Length: 90
Picture (spheres, rainbow, N blue to C red):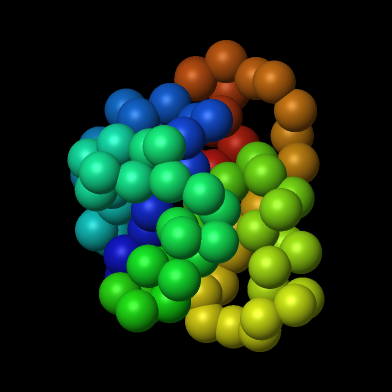
């Protein structure tokens, strides 16, 4: 499974997800998509069959408008420390 970590989440989360869950996780900046528009990220994830991990509700709006794929993991936990974020995802 490919998981793309949106720009507002810590890029180090990608390494942790890969090591913890044996998935292929990448931060958007590693994919040269850090400054891309949401719709560009959405379409790229669709073509690569990637899941987007985000706090951004705009991706939910895109799924409602354009359908799936990609799948979206929408975090609604607000601002948390990196440690607490990892704990939530465990």
